[in-house]
Image (cartoon, rainbow, N blue to C red; front, side, top):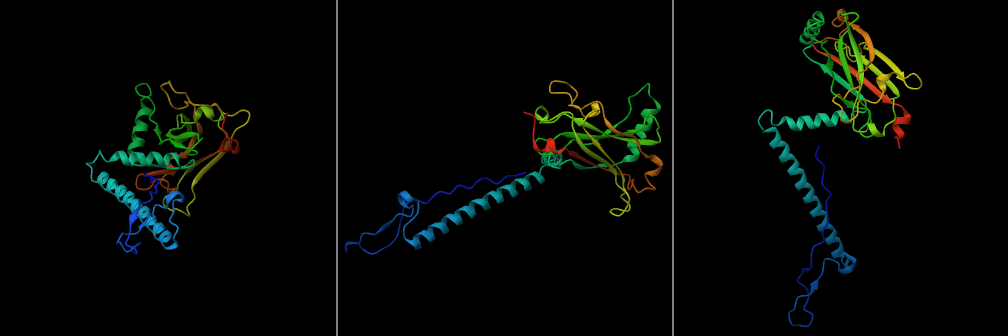
Length: 272
């Protein structure tokens, strides 16, 4: 995201203007529009002209900034495919930081993903379970917890999908209260009848004594893993047989919504 630079105001230097002759010798009268020590001209008309000049200079400078930002965007769009994806990646990163814990995960080409999951589950000795992880998002732009969502076939019942959240290492972990406390909502969106269709939704509050270890602080810097290996969610969130009849699978895509709300304690203060 481009930021507008702060516009500095610089007073114009002394300007010579045609005036009356002071003594008949034709010498031009000098009028200093820099305003001397007080910074503004004393004559009301000159003061008004001075303020107008400054205003026009500011507007011109701001327009220069806008034009430069647009020029950069055009240049990025004209870059070869692959080179211009850096800007899109930065934009996505900003969205994930500023979503305030409300995130929609679009899982495209689900049939191919499901085939991989079923194939891995049928050969447990030869491969690890196939799991899908969402992009990682924050509950707040500053002093927020970082989470992601995991989707996989239920190991207890392969005819169901498991939906689980994980705490992920974030930028503010060392000053946050642990374990995480708050409320989490997981939702499978009925795309066919949206927005009046019935979504599949589960909400749970966590905190206090007996908080699951899944909400403990994730591995700190220096360790290879960045995610708390313990997840929290539902082993049998939705049956595969209900995906299409329920309107959850449309155009080979699932949409999962998650809302993570940290408690008032964690929102208003950080650990000192």
